[in-house]
Length: 373
Ligand SMILES: *Cc1c(COP(=O)(O)O)cnc(C)c1O
Image (cartoon, rainbow, N blue to C red; front, side, top):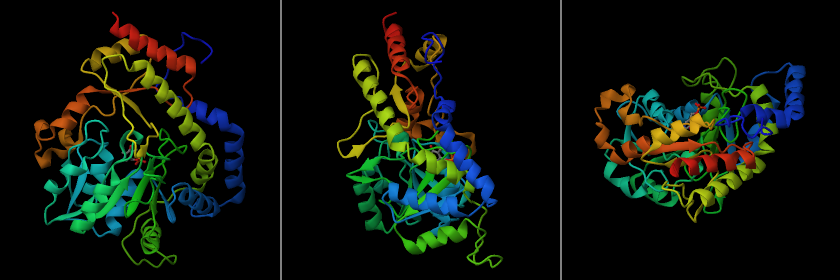
């Protein structure tokens, strides 16, 4: 497809990922099939050690998906009915849903408009006697400014649960995302920077006791088979996914590097256009899970790109506080004005690791054509 300059440019080419690693992936799946062991086995154990090493954390615990990873973190900390958890107003709905599934109430805090991430200077105003935790989300692949978040958490005795579903490989002040907070939740949904061939997730932490709790919680509350210590869940990362994730993990830095190169190309070429472009703070390393631009003319721009065969997606069209699912909180659109505005203007360009230089160039030229009409 990349050979035909006029072919459509998909937002993300997941098929190309498998194609590149097909032989290795086939081999890893065959290994699981021959083993006859499908859950909580050697592939998961190996992936957990490798993921802990990669994220510079002491323990990694595989779970069923990213939402479950977040939810189990809240459960392990005993957060539930009557408790409040500080969440970003600008995030994917899963962050809020995890809080709700635990029985607690999400309390939104507005973002820093440049990084789109939780603004630490706004957190203290949202803390009440019911607040139990802060959930920073490293949105789009840019790390949250964690030091002030951790300082506030210490001051008020709050837990910090990071949503790192979009931040595989991101770095905050010389250390990988993975163990700044008390627990870090990961998703390996197929489109993430490290994605399985289906649903998968993990939690990383430096706390050994907590890690043990997660292992019990994910498997029916049992340490010993058929002995149930707590009301646990069925939330396990399957062997076949663990085996494939191990293959893809070996290529994560390479693929993140390709994303970074594409982002650099976009940043240079689009700087002269009337668009708001992503930033990368000096203290952080961005992994560009999503390359998000902002324009007051988003609808027209998206349509123009679509007409020229360039696929884009809006991350996200409706902020959590404006979703019907959260009508009970009675938060008006204007209660979170920054998140509201961001959601009206953001547009994500194709920037996956398999976007070719020619495709990237064509996206740039098409945007140029839009502004020189
Ligand atoms: C993808 C994502 C999740 C949820 O992950 P799943 O594996 O799909 O459950 C949570 N938070 C953010 C920010 C995400 O992007």
